[in-house]
Image 1 (cartoon, rainbow, N blue to C red):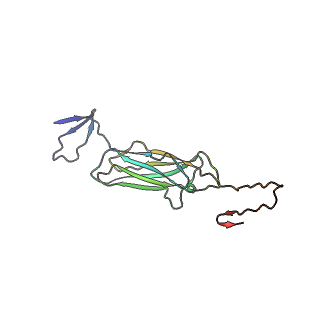
Image 2 (image 1 turned 30 degrees about the vertical axis):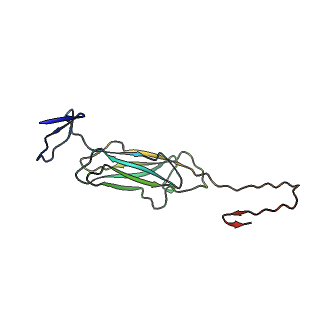
Image 3 (image 1 turned 90 degrees about the horizontal axis):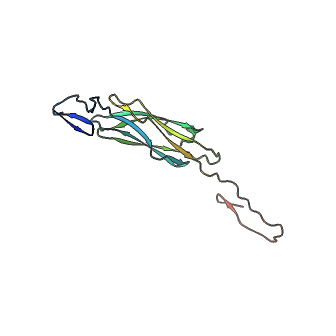
Length: 170
């Protein structure tokens, strides 16, 4: 009546409706959503990628919600304007992986350390659950551009130079 494969028992499902895949103990195996930060550190002005996976392909569309939250002093202001802090991912039948791209804003004039952005999964579709619900990517500061100091020795006579900053000549 049944076959065993890697600890899973699968009954002969021909013509079956509502059949369950069960583990070796006979307990149903519930498809689970997980998230991982595939970009663990991203510089300001770039993006972090979070990959959300479903442990088993489904025959119907399934959904899971997500929320972005800053840690270590990071806030929504560290994201590119217009980036949604919440959303719902819809996995079409047969889909087991989707990516969430999170763009970080550049705030090069404000040095910060220890900032990160977490993506937290919630509200999985009926018949699914959450496995790994939180992943985090650190935000790396872009080095601030400061003034350039030029020292000209006092003894130098008839010294001239041209300078330009942002295409403005001095």
